[in-house]
Length: 218
Image 1: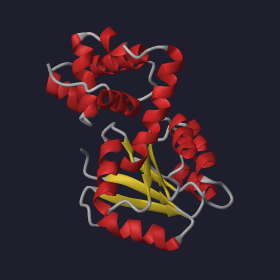
Image 2: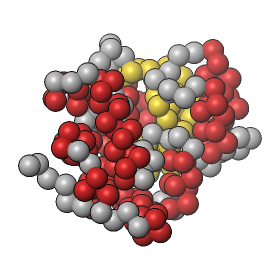
Image 3: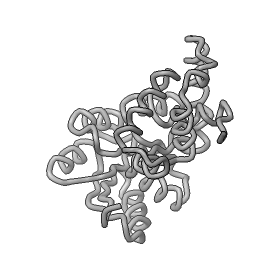
Image 4: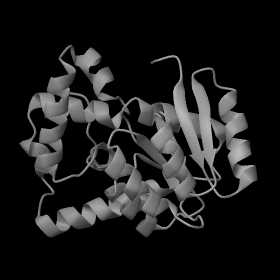
């Protein structure tokens, strides 16, 4: 990990911005580089700075979090974005993940979970608030029932199965590369193949699929 993970906090409530900033400032590897009170301000600051992770509220004036997420993704597909919200609605979860969010966290989460989420998405992982994992699983199962892919796990090679297991454990591509002693590019190819064979869209769905199908070590 580099010296600092540069973070921007976007929330229309000053107390929330300041509270999160104080929590993160206690972490030696995380630096709060900017805060913004709405999406328009966030976009403006994003153009002028360099950020690794953005904490993005959904309900804001002028430009809400979903619209902001869409614009940020159009500008830079690599920046990591965690939706930080009071909404535990399945619709918001699915929509923001489909738009490219790397994480979805409720504002009542504890500080250690917030820090873990930031570090995890920065390293290529994802974070879904535990209380919402079941909702995402329902969406995956609905899609699988529709397409008749319940036995998709059988189509994976032994190596793909191993990669799926490590994804479920929360490892990034870099970590998997070190663990299996293969190149990071090879890991990416395996991940792409896994998602295609299981008809999934991202690593979060792959992890939940692994839990649902009781994927275990050989």
